[in-house]
Amino acid sequence: MKGYRVWAEIDLSLLRDNIYNLKKHLNGETKLMAVVKADAYGHGAVAISNFCINNGCDYLGVGDSTEALELRDSGVVAPILVLGAVIEEELPLLISNNIELAVHSKDLLTKIDEESKKQNKRASVHLKIDTGLHRFGISPQNCEGIVETISKYSNIRIKGIFSHFASAYRDIERTKEQLNTFMQTVTKTCKKYNLKDIMIHIANSGGAVALQNSQQNMIRSGGALYGLIGNNEFKQILSLKTQVTYLKKVYKNSLVGYDGTFKCEKDTLLAICPVGYNDGIPTCYANSFEAHINGQKSQFAGKVAMDYITLDVSNIRDITVGQEVVIYDRQHNNIFDVAKKYNLNRYEITCTLSKRVKRVYIEYENETIKRFIKSQKYYHPKKNGSRKTALTP
Ligand SMILES: Cc1ncc(COP(=O)(O)O)c(C=O)c1O
Image (cartoon, rainbow, N blue to C red; front, side, top):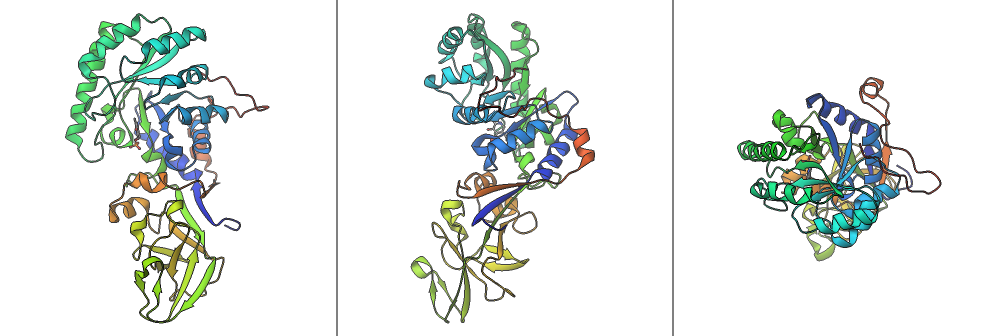
């Protein structure tokens, strides 16, 4: 793509296909939360959120308050849940923007109630139950106690109860145990306190696909939407590309890059490309990773630097400055496979693409899928710079 040094090409038509394919797994009434934390796993939260909401997703899940407010500020009015912890100072803006909050303990309840009262609002909260991940969350035996406490606060509404699987992609037995604990806790609590019409959610992408009864009335998906879970039904939507900015001939025995870790076995043609570890290229790719130029493989020569990589392009036919270089795409260096090979977390690869990497969105029409997906439910573009009031379904 002319004009960019390094860019992530994000194929929204594939995102639409992934939503469609995921929905085919869902029980009829199950809602779909698009997990867009960490800038939508590096894909760009605002663009991805708008697209997901306009193409059949019902909810957005973010990691923290800043991410929630970024979406509201950009005009997203769909329901947003902060999946992680919030701090007291963040409450006024979160409540005024109708951001839903995860409750992990009794700690902030009084503050949430007071702030909501001040704003003449009722905050919506989702109780997070720790069923085995042992990070945040209320232990199952304390769930009823929290509901009892919340029932005394007139400005807090329990909108949901949720939990999170610890190993949905690797340990199905452990996942089933978590689901069991969760469902027992939910059933008992809802019965005792007559909680009706609340959102029950535990499944991530892996859980939703592997265990249909984990879906309940909402699933939270990131990996399947971005095509990063190694399942062919869900296609990787991101390609990372750069271009050759400089070509250089060096003699046999030259040492390339910092610390000279690549020694040229023969006279060698090198291509310098403007992407480095500051853009999200892992340093472990040194002297090993193969980029693709016109479908031909080209090995990293030397260490990955902050701003540049160097490729051995001696064998590439018709190489020129300006030529496109593919670091990842679906055919060459699928991110799931690369992560396995280099012992990286597959999400880490996209999450660490820095802001220097331009996100470029492309989309092809697929009318069949478009018709299937319910559309335009929550998203209304921002008008005159004003912040839209969030919808509460
Ligand atoms: C609380 C929570 N729910 C859902 C997800 C989505 O998981 P996945 O990407 O496996 O679909 C995440 C992601 O880490 C998460 O933290």
